[in-house]
Image 1 (cartoon, chains in turn brown, yellow):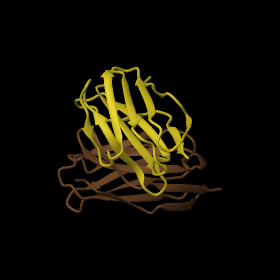
Image 2 (cartoon, chains in turn purple, red):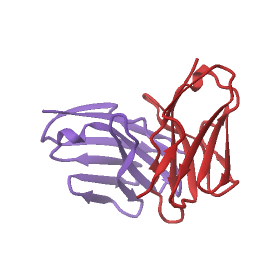
Image 3 (tube, helix red, strand yellow):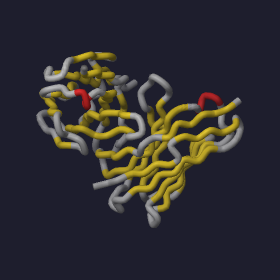
Image 4 (spheres, helix red, strand yellow):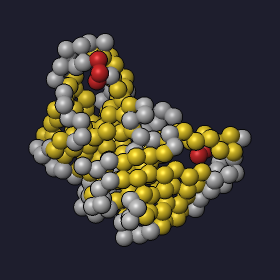
Length: 110
Length: 113
């Protein structure tokens, strides 16, 4: 089955700097790669996703890149702000079934 | 606006008890999921359901069962609760077909003593 590895487990950056979180997956048949953000005490919410027929997708300060050959994908957050502090989860899967990474706790320092 | 609700935010049960966790979604979603969330392990899929009365095992189904008698409701059952089932349990739903976004409930923090 699918296996997703996420790094780093914790990340601390200065406000205004960029943050990058990386994930690798094992199943070459996976075709859907979402990223979820979970603020403290709240439910995970989708922030961006990408499908296997696209190499990059951007939404304002957030971008995701996908390298199918190497089986890895990354989340890029630019111009970080205090409200970006949260736990971020990547996931990979086919259709409805997703396998999640272990999560990255991102802290934005003022 | 999609709404996924779970019956309890916090639950404390004793070892050996039968535990029911309920999840309800109001958007006519076809798919429903149960995950458990543990620090350092991310979200792990316990069971999911593509349709009423249909269920499939996820990655960690041992010690759990599920029931989906109505489209909007998906129940997770711990037949005989054990201390290693102490965790945060998250329910999610998704529309199905070409829309894969999963909408999560607020979670139930279960403590088994």
